[in-house]
Structures are given as structure tokens and as C-alpha cells.
Amino acid sequence: MAYFNNQKEPVKNVETNVWSCVSEDCQGWMRENYSFDKEPTCPICQSEMEREVRVVPEMK
Image: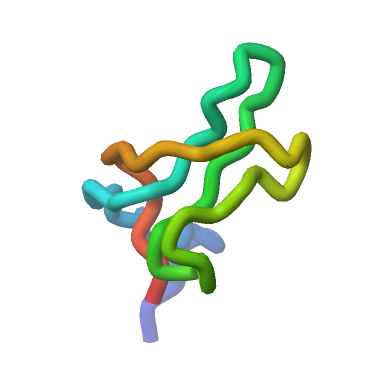
């Protein structure tokens, strides 16, 4: 039996399409796969959002 001192497997980062808020004062963003609207508004400040690609941890 092996013990790994409570070490967890590292999470892979992947390129993901996201919606990002266009407002200078807001840092809001969401994964494109979890949006119900074709062109969502920011849930934080209600501004428009634009598509971009970010490297984020993979969700299974």
C-alpha cells in the first residue's frame, strides 16, 4: 500500500472558450459551455460580454 502524503493529482489547464465582460471596472467571465444565452450579459454588472479564449483548469 502506498501513501502519497495527501498529495493530489495536478489539475490540467486547457484552452477554453469563455465570455468576458467588456467593462473596465468588472472582472466577470464565464465558460461558454455554461451559458444559456447566445450573447449573455454580465451577471455582476449587466454589461455586454465578448468571446475570448483563456487557459483555465479543466472541469470534468
